[in-house]
Image (cartoon, rainbow, N blue to C red; front, side):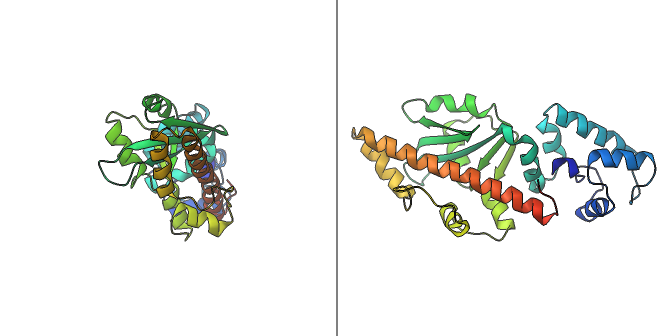
Length: 249
């Protein structure tokens, strides 16, 4: 999808981008050929040639910053296909919803593996790990996860691109909580985790603090399910948004 994207060229609107596609200009390489032989379907600007060449080069270098700065924020989802290997999925558990509540667990999913950061054990290692990724993916992260993280780690350095799956799913007319959308799409959670909520996570943390080691294990299982299902939702959203544009990712 990214290599078929032209919205980062100044003056290209979604309508003009589609006009390019419909005329057979479906990649940056196509653009270069058609620009040079004067057969683009729209009037070309001189700076476009340089920017398309730079786009090819910067993608080869894996420079997501280049595209993040040029693409409109609501089109950053197009970066996912090209930078999927640099994506990290994040979900937190807390003691409650208030400003005085604390993070108990941060779960990350990347490279097909789950990693947990637990308060009192290894949570302080989270910032160093997060800073190594290109894309951060959450569900309602700006409304919940990120405010908690910023309070706990004021100097936190996040990946250059943040994708909120909740916002992407809204574009596909899917509304509600993460679990409600999972159910609607048929993404069934493992038993006995199906039906558990954030309130159960609070109870499990309190049990862990009382010395019930098994409670932490169950809490991490719950968090793992949250963050791996987030990955499934992102894959779904990316695929469907590509299809809406007539692409397959």
